[in-house]
Image 1 (cartoon, rainbow, N blue to C red):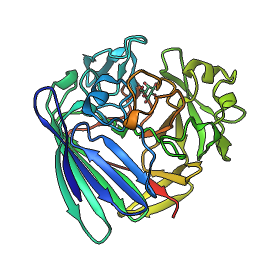
Image 2: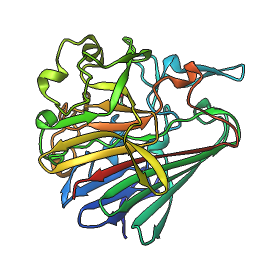
Image 3: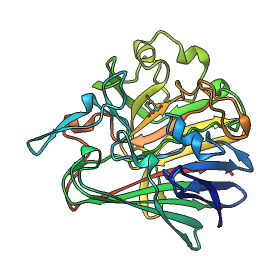
Length: 345
Ligand code: GAL
C-alpha cells in the first residue's frame, strides 16, 4: 500500500490517497467521499476523476464517490416511515427530487480509513458514523465500506447498522471507460446485462412501473453496442432519460462465489482494453451513460469531460424505494451487500 497527501480541503483538513493493487488492477482511494480517484487496468486509468479535490467539490457528477444514505432518487424528497412523514432536501432542483443522499451526502464526507492485507489481497476499510437527523434521515447509522483488490477482482463491500428504521441504499458512482478514460466516448463499447425487467420512469425519472425489456432499447440480454444511435433513439424511455440512465432488475441465474457470498452476474462492459464483469447481490443496477458529464472543469491531466465519455454501473435498490415500502434498513439489522468488478486476465 502506498499512502500520500492528495490535497487539502478549504477547512485545512488533509485528504489522503491510498493506493492498493497489483499489475492487473490498481486502485487509488481517497478518504474524502471514499472516492476511487484512479482505477488502473493493466496500467491504463479507466475511471473519471480529478487531480485536485476542488474538481470533486465543484462538479455535481459524484465522480468515483460513495453514495448514501440513499442512492438515486426519492420523489419530492418525501417518504413516510412508521407513520412519520419525512421531508428530505430536494437537491435535484430541476425535478424536485432528493438525489444521492441530499445536500451533503457520503460523497462529501471524510471517512476513517484502515488498511489490511491477507492472502487474498489488499483491503481498505472505510468507516463513517452518520448521526440521527443528518439530512433529516432517521437513525444513527454506522457505515463500513471495504474496497478490496484480490487478483483480477476489485470489490466494494457495503455494511451498515442503524439504531432506527431508515431508508438505506448505498452505491459507488464510478464513471468507467473500457478504452481508458482518455479513450473518448463509449460508442464503440459493448454492454450485456442479465436483466429481463427494468423500471419505467416518468418525466421526473421516478419509477412508475416494472416492465419487461423485451422489444425495447433496454434489451441488453445479448451484448449490444452503446452506440450514439442507441442512446439517441426514439424509445420513449430513452428520450425521457436523455439517453441511458435507467434501473434494470438483475436476474439471479448465473452466480460466482466471492468472499464467502453468492453474487449474481449482472453485466459485462467491454472495450478495447478488455471486459469487466459486474457481480452483485443487490437486486438492481442503474446504468448511466454520463449524459450530463460535459463541463468546463477538466478531468485528470487536463482531459476534456464529454457527454457519454463513460458508463456508471451503480448497484442499488430501485429508485424511490421508500415510497414503495422498499429499501428500509430495520433498526439493529445488518445491511450487507457487495459489488464485484472482475477484470479479464
Ligand atoms: C445517476 C443518475 C443520473 C444523474 C447522475 C449524477 O445515478 O441516474 O440521473 O443524476 O447520477 O449526475
